[in-house]
Length: 120
Image (cartoon, rainbow, N blue to C red; front, top):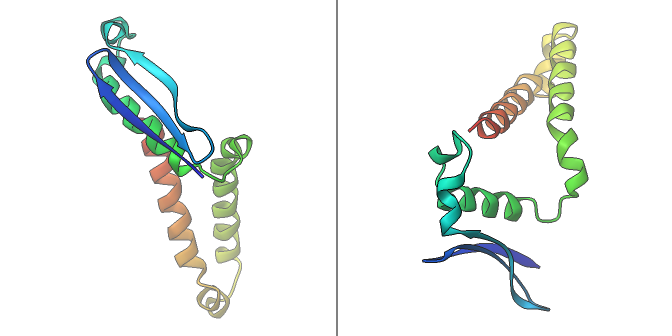
């Protein structure tokens, strides 16, 4: 099992990966002198904040095939659309028994969170 974390030092920020097999390995380095060279708009996110987001994303995706991530939001939206369709054509007993509305709320909240964090 590996864990990604950041190390902040005067020269910049190192993103490091530590595994039981190899110990610590620097996987990315953000030099301090490049902070001012960032494109317009990127300055709102300091390199330290960006590195925290990278670390959080990598650690949250442990055990997930990266190729599958792109389609997950699409699949969640399809599942929500399916539940909406089911809820409009089903009896109240069926909706209650299978907690259709609760599952719709969970999917909607997950989609909203993914979309809001993607736009930050």
